[in-house]
Amino acid sequence: MPIILGCESCGKEEAVQRPTEDKSETPVTEEKKKKQKGRDRFVNFLMMGGFLVILFAIVGIVIAISILTRDC
Image 1 (cartoon, rainbow, N blue to C red):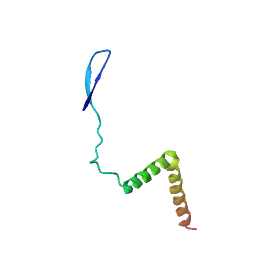
Image 2 (cartoon, rainbow, N blue to C red):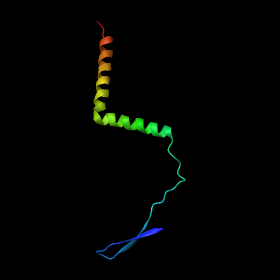
Image 3 (cartoon, one colour):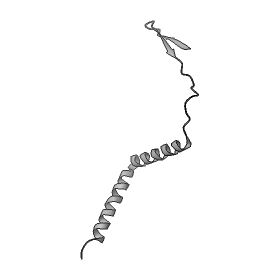
Image 4 (tube, one colour):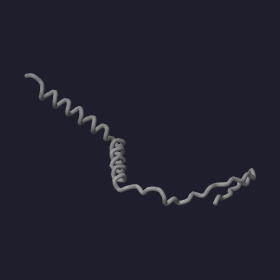
């Protein structure tokens, strides 16, 4: 059932559809929630400076490999 809203200043009326609860939607499974939560945590980690941690780890691995494979 639409709701009719009116504007007092211009006198214009507009019909607005009331949102209904649709029970036919499929519920979100527990597995999707876990994947979403993990992804959100990873993105939050990156936003809080995690990209620097990953960058330093990669640079450290490259330096370690170059030192270990260096000819004496």
